[in-house]
Amino acid sequence: MCRLLAYLGSPISLETLLYKPEHSLIVQSYKPREMLSGTVNADGFGVGWYRQNSTEKDIEPFTYKNTLPIWNDTNLPSLSRYIESECVLAYVRSATAGQVLDLSNCQPFKYEHLLFIHNGLIDNFRQTLYRPIRNLLSDKIYQSINGNTDSEHIFSLLLNQLQANPGKTLEQALHGTLLLLAEMAQSYESYVLGNVVISDGNRLIASRFASQSSAPSLYWLRDDPNFPKSVIIASEPLSDGNWISCPENSIISVGSDCDIRIEQI
Image 1: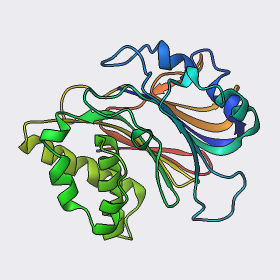
Image 2: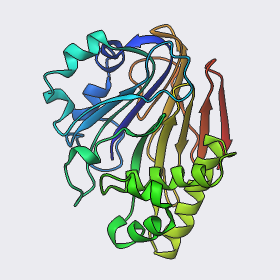
Image 3: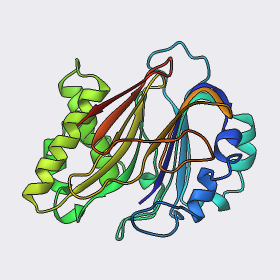
């Protein structure tokens, strides 16, 4: 399991978001509190953000990734002081057994103007849904895959839904992707844990989902005194405050005005 963090709101420095909170994502990398499996998140990390005050609809986001544990990256503290954004996605990785520690497997994944992070797994992925998912993809989406993780394949399946149905919203595409994955997994006596956040720079769309048993933890916080005029979605609360647990098997939509809508899957 990994730990996720997504922010949408007033411009914020990466330092304030990643380092300042008492139970920051940095702390969660070596001292997580609510992981279903694993003890540390030391198999790499990544941060994605959008250019501040951009009016372009399809602006390509920026990413910074490393296969080192986040606490061992000597450049991130300095970079974090100088980077500000209104929309940030970040993640620390605890790799599923057998998956390669490679930069291509580090999240966030991006495609055109979209950023994507995932905490969870497809059980026994290589022996179950690896090939069936690839068989469903268009050539363009198939060729965009750079790594071999279940997470990137979930993203690719979502992108395929958007490409095949241009009128679909991100919420609809994520909803359809999770239901399709659950159906496919059941046919292979497998299961899916799908805590996801996807963004286009203007909105956050998240899910807390499990096709069997309990889903990994996921919380949201809105307009906190430490983070005014913003919404944060995170695997674990970063600090004291009115953190609210996302309902299991739900999709959480955060608009550009920080309004929140929650729908059951």
